Image (cartoon, rainbow, N blue to C red; front, side, top):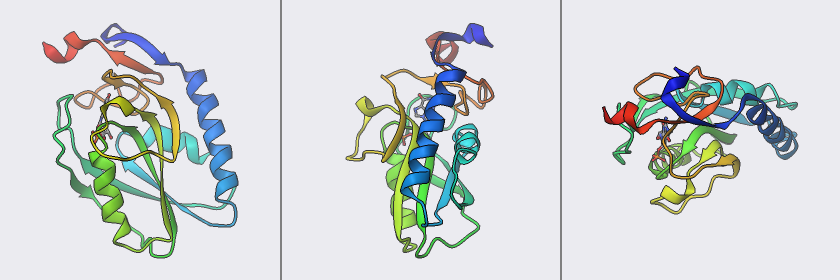
Length: 179
Ligand code: 5GP
């Protein structure tokens, strides 16, 4: 498993520290607002579950799944809803929790889709931001770490559904996806 990683970018400790900081900031910003945290399945599931444990004010949770990548490493730009929310977000403060923002097409789709439901506000919290790859004008409101143009896996992020459970974020060896 670890042989497939070229190097570790963020250790368990680095991730835990940053998640605590984000949780503290979100708790401050959303005090008294009873927001809904939306987990974008499956990539953000580890980040989401650690992040919500750091929130010290009342919140609700919901889950949504979209597909964009298939089994490759290059975004198609096409986004499809696979699972919708269970709850209404009308007049609610919404925080979208993402694993990584790459081209930005997935988030653009999500924000447009959720805005149509008349929430009080929508903000984005992403673990990773691959800003150098952006194809649309979009800046996440809360960012764990910025990453350069690597294909990364671990801490929820997959390649062909593997590596999601790896507790660190690492760079996948190109030979794994080019063989
Ligand atoms: P975007 O629509 O911003 O191009 O892509 C967003 C989605 O692509 C992410 O939610 C994630 O599923 C996938 N993605 C983008 N970059 C990476 C990466 O480096 N590693 C992995 N595992 N997935 C990525």
